[in-house]
Image 1: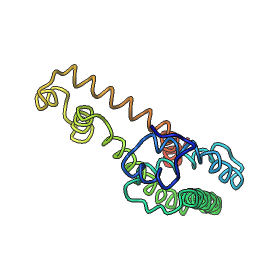
Image 2: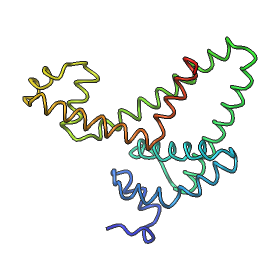
Image 3: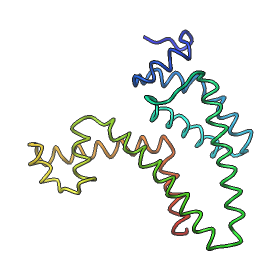
Length: 196
């Protein structure tokens, strides 16, 4: 059993790369306050600061197998500072574009494409973490657009089982996306595209 105060960052990074969720939780508990402080000191907006911190940890988990982390504290501090810089730059750029509506619309759409790609990658990662049956049902329903009856026949299960697995998958994904702040990001993006 991992002890929060008795495990080094190096060991936590090693465990994180294997998908150890407890190691991730310890990293989160150990660093979220300091990252939030860095973000808030620059942005002076508690909601945006919290969203950036959530994004950093979401990205840390999503890229856990491929991230080259020599010093966890420095890695996380660098990541939050870069996110803050990007946020400030985007806000400044948006304000500059208010004078020219045509340029603004083009810029916002370009940003939305990048954000949508990040969301798509994150969602794909969350789908792949679903239990096997849930994942199969979800992919056949949402990616292949198959009706429940066809899915039931293909997987040799009842339609009620298909519905139950689909409901479970959707609830799990919604919860994970809400925790990561991605649903609010989607609402923000849609309001930018279509207006309020």
